[in-house]
Image: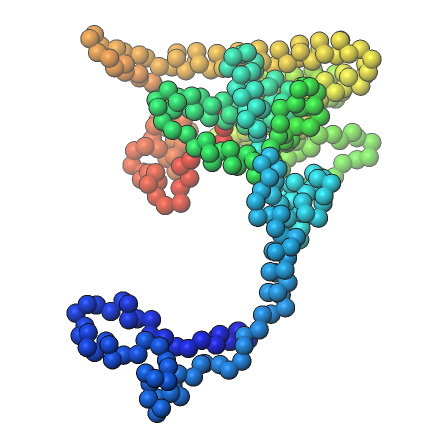
Length: 394
């Protein structure tokens, strides 16, 4: 039941807002407050209050104000450098759970940490100034490669805005960094690896693994991740000789896949052609860490040799990636014909294409030919179309 109206005499609150064109003699005769001298005895009963009982506070409302004036006073003003969550009142020992879970009754909601200014500047310095690879910085500082690329682009944008004389939302950024848990830059590099900002080796979900497949296998046969990937891809099983060689040196087998992704076996025909699903060890963002852990467990006391092998393995991955990008760029330039007229600042680029059913597809929207731009309406300005980047290429 809603609370009753308080005991107050009804007043004419519209008088101050009446227009000046109203007759002053008429306004002066309207009483502004209910009193015995201004209202006749016959109309005094209309000045009675709406209720004769005092509106009482409910029990929960009294408890709320008691808590706000007592224990909740600590949440009125936040402490710089610390979160202002309700769970920290009950956990005086500043446990990590109190700094990451704002709501005591919802333990599933976790407040994710953000990068501190020191860690963000360190990422930019290592990538831009020290010329380290994104993969190496991701492993050393415990930050995902996509976030490393985003940090570098954002810092470059900030520097460009400063050069152009544009203002930055620095007060807002400082307030957010003081009220939200942040990941600091540790002095020891090993602390960044032991306490990373986020998981850097999460396995992406492949579309081929969506269906549930029941595949019978005999007990005498070894069935590993490679075999499971081939089953999901509807590819035939590997020969016993190749399976034996891969089992002897699994690190070499993974390196052969990651350093030459274009040589992966393909199945299917036409538009349905796709690569065979590879094992999880080859599809994670940092496959070289698996080989590093195996080598470290095989030689637990040889720290220098393990570290040297890790650097060599990382160098091979980076060299192979640079070579792939160089070959792709050269192939693209060979397919284009560049023409630049004299005394012109424009350069025209022509590319030979083949418009056929194999390139355009059955619906005419194939990406291998320019047919998708002719005769078919574009959905660029249609509602519901995602026009923002959905992924970051690093």
